[in-house]
Image 1 (cartoon, rainbow, N blue to C red):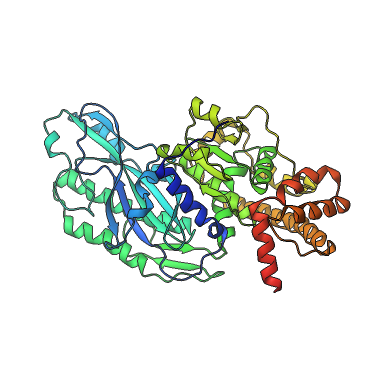
Image 2: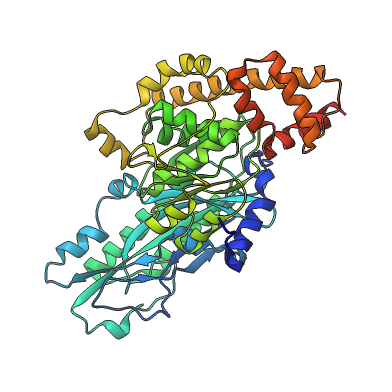
Length: 493
């Protein structure tokens, strides 16, 4: 197939992701602020919005804190809304029941939906997690953090109300996702109280409410980042939600696994889970397809800690915006998540990429050929009892859990951690076999040297079973193995 020419925007995004690929699975230093910047993303007041038809619009950054934060190079808005900002046109009635149901529904319903998710961005010095909550709001009423005035004064004569989602996003170096989400839910609770007061009394109390929301970010921004192994308790001066928040102890890998691994093991059969893991180790091009952004982002992010101590070296974009779908033609190893994949694009990439569909719980490619893991039966026996307790087979339970994927019991989180530990132990065992083969080669193995890799592979085949030959041959040719060799060499020098 002829190589495809990518747009400048796609090339720039791939270059950024490649330049930070090394850092993607390396623990950041526990220093700095709990978050880098808060962003409010939605439809700009400058955009002319159709008050008669529901349409999709380009998102823009509406507000930021700290106000001097520079985020222009991150293209945050398109990742917050990977398919654009879609409006809803609601006919105005005396009771306003339909509008109020959208605007003032229980905040718990927002938490138990696919409106909370995490994106990943390339900052100037490190990767940044974007912790996002999307909330439906009346477009003509700006949030309390914005200056007064109507967004749609020119459309006041319309008989319709326009509902448009806005994304509340915290950019951070640290995957303290539960804590970050709770802060955003507190902000949304304040915003809803502000809107209710406007609805009931018409008294906006704008400056007071604005100060409350901004004060919350100021307070959170100043909190000390906990050291690895430490917990952090934050007490909020609020009368709306729980005033005491906890950031649990642990390293980044365990925190991500406890938060997101459930979106793999609860929703995918163990056979598919192990195939994904094997494909990752062999640096296959991997596309995850899932309409639920909560599940998509968590599932993708939880794959990387499973590789430790190996570090993914390819492109990694958990949620790929629609306008960047051409990145799927990139001639490099990648893991990318999309909500939808049209037939034309699927046809173009199916021969070179593995396409995992969460709806069908299968690979879309009709003939998937992934080399099995070495001693895979040993790993299966260890994790199957744990996996069987977590994987959901009941369709009703699956549906409710799928819409609230982050709600895990302490017992489930313990099982996630046990699966993570078993996989780490398993990986350590077969990596030790490779290290043994390297030592017995009497050769200073140089990663990337084809002759050295052939010698290493031949030696390994004399030590290991032939049925694992295909996996090892693929693995020792990967960029992650090359980085692992260099890392081990530096430790010994």
